[in-house]
Image (tube, rainbow, N blue to C red; front, side, top):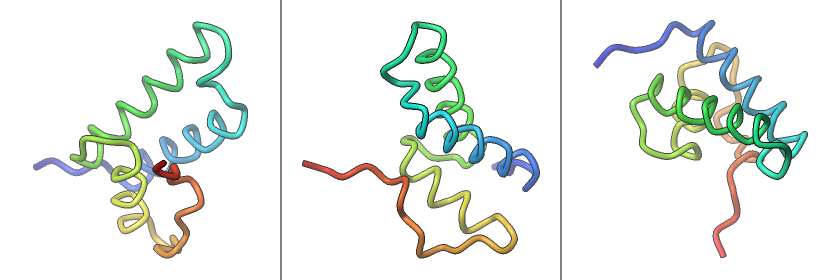
Length: 77
């Protein structure tokens, strides 16, 4: 499996975090599409099938990342 460069992963994670904070998933069609595109790209870059797993996988590959920080993971109900 090809692995994304850490700089690419870092950019995707930062973009995802910013869009999540802005609640892009509840915004305009363009904002929702960008949020979905970033989540999809993050999954592709980490070889995972959902964004929560992608964030965990990325955290293990980024230098200096705190692997115990799961604050962006969604709460299952």
